[in-house]
Amino acid sequence: MSTARMAAYWTLRAVLEGEDLPRALVRERDTLSDERDRALVTELTTGALRWLAALDYIIVRASGRPTGRLDPEVLAVLRLGAYQLLYLDRIPASAAVNESVILAKRVGKSSAAGLVNAVLRRVAEGATTPPLPPDPGLDGPRKTQLAYLSVSGSHPAWLVERWLDRVGFARADAWVRFNNRAPTLTLRANRLRITAEALSRRLEEHGVTTTPTRWARDGLSVVSGNPLRTPCAKEGLFVVQDEASQLVAELVAVQPAERVLDACAAPGGKTTALYAGLGEGGLLVAAELRAPRVRLLQRIVHESGADAVRVVRHDLRHPPFLPVFDCVFVDAPCSGLGTVRRDPEIRWRRQPEDLARMAALQRALLEGAAAVARPGGRLVYATCSSEPEENEDVVRAFLAGHPEFDLVPPDAVSPVRDELRSVITSEGWLATTPDEHGLELFFAATLRRRPE
Image 1 (spheres, rainbow, N blue to C red):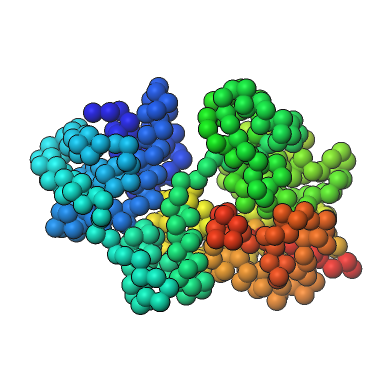
Image 2: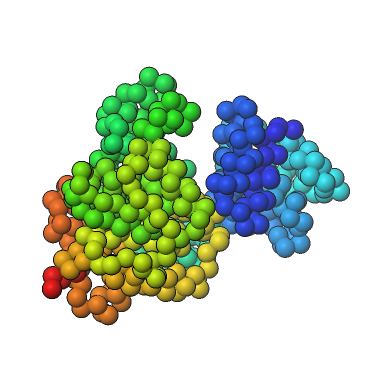
């Protein structure tokens, strides 16, 4: 049996029991020496998490029993095997079934080997036309649309129901399809050390092909090769950062010589982007609450060459600063529901009640930010959430309680590139979407405190 499948099994089990996917992947995948094995671990784990609802739907029908009646070990083996049969054309069906049977034995479930073999053979027989809910089209019954989006599209029913009600079936379907496509690796050139054009040439020398991103000015999409295993990574020439996230950092529009507080700064990708625009004479304070994330922030800042950034540990809900900052950037903790393409486990972790809990925290953070922004200064509030409770509703609630602040368009701070203008709504905030921009769902708004 391949070591990659065993590593994928332990990664999947760990994530479904509550561990973060990146941490579990690093622990299991990086013990493998073969690059192809490491890639297979990532493919199997993220794919099984991405298509979890569809896989379980098919497993239930092939096994004749609900998933709750299957041992966790057996269910994990079946999910990985079914994913290979249904979504990975390059793996022969016989290999997927046989390897799964061996895997079941290796994880202590020899008694279930016959069940695994029988269920996966049934899955393999119907792999070309799996019995999933069909596409009902724009005019299909709402119940049928929900079944299609949640089961065939493998998203939580509560989430796609919200999308269906808010944006309609066509857009909800586009969002679901986008989230189920494996993302490309996106880099941001570290402008403290190199331009995007020069970085692309350097990476090409090491067998990595890239193309410029459509929207972000310093972004590169990786076409082939692994930039993380090149000297460019060790030299701090780039950070891995979603394109939409890069746009948020640009919206902050740091000006030379400003005093800036990056209030929720870890892991530090946006921090280093902000610092690159600050110039001499400015001050950037990067703050984080939890000690492990402070250490991560310090490492990223150092590796990027932004050593003049002042990293501090503090809780913005109890601001330790006076109102002296020209700009306070609140990249708020959120549900992360705008990034489920890249982090597929998030869709299964979140529950509807999380939105109100996160919004309460976000409003408290904005209250703290308001206390440290000088008169005439600005707040930039951002999330990577798809949901209005964490985005527009938080901003509106803040403005209702703070008449001294106004929502301002980004170009009131600094001229906006046409590419960035394309993701600004008529209300004046940044809102990226899969169907309109081909980007994850990010949100950002600029609020200015009136001069005294």
